Image (tube, rainbow, N blue to C red; front, side):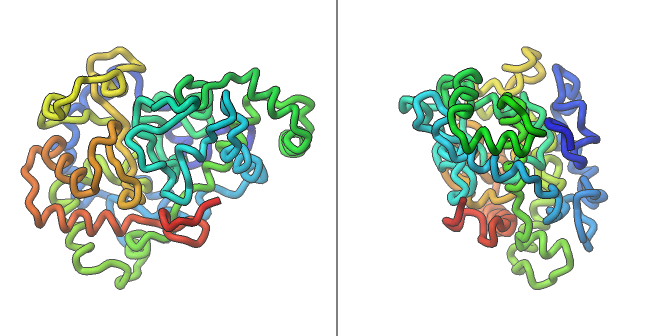
Length: 356
């Protein structure tokens, strides 16, 4: 695959994330799509390797991304604090793999101890999603590399410094030459591709729910099965479906209620969502719908990190996205189902303390 090429499973979406008001008509998609999603054919069925049940959610294929030799180089870059402006922060600082691919903070700490402006999402399964960042401003995992690297609050550096640092290391020079057709000089596109190749390995198949989708009748408890039924009947599948259980569309936060007014804190730039990219009023407070895979181990929740527990997050979603008042039974069953979406990476359950 050429450097920077999009993986085959994303070719159908090669035009990138929506622009401007292209999906203006989806402002009310959640309540309307409920009528369409219940009993719908599987979304992204081509990715659902070995699925035996026809559901709106499809399992992760273990071999979705063929391994690339550049991935090991990308792993080293991902963990190298030397890429940051002051040598203190790496990609793994905000996305520690042993902790679910995110740092558990509402806002991550960058160079010089600065706080970021938005909650860092998990890096696991990000390659399955149609765009990157909460505002969907990057088309894929390679295009997103510039974001944290060049952000003055995050890694606080520039490409000139990064390339000089890499060129000064004999092992890096040899690795880039080996993996990029004998390249005489390291280029930003090589760095993007190497990191992106590593991120593509961070998919998490093997969740209890995936095993159930593939025909294992004993993979889920009765409570988890009831929770999945509630997930569908309430309409959560309108936005959370497909192989990533989300991550394939934009949606307004607060379709059926004013979340930001009720939150009780001043609105910040990060709360504007996709509007910051397009300046289209239809995109105000619109965000990429997050993937729910491994959601039980990736608190706190939402772009602002305002929900400390999964129970809190479910209650907010039911109120502001579905316009309902959640019952204790709703919360209990939905959380049980969501816990079944925790997959495996490196032979261990995600969030189990193992990472590399």
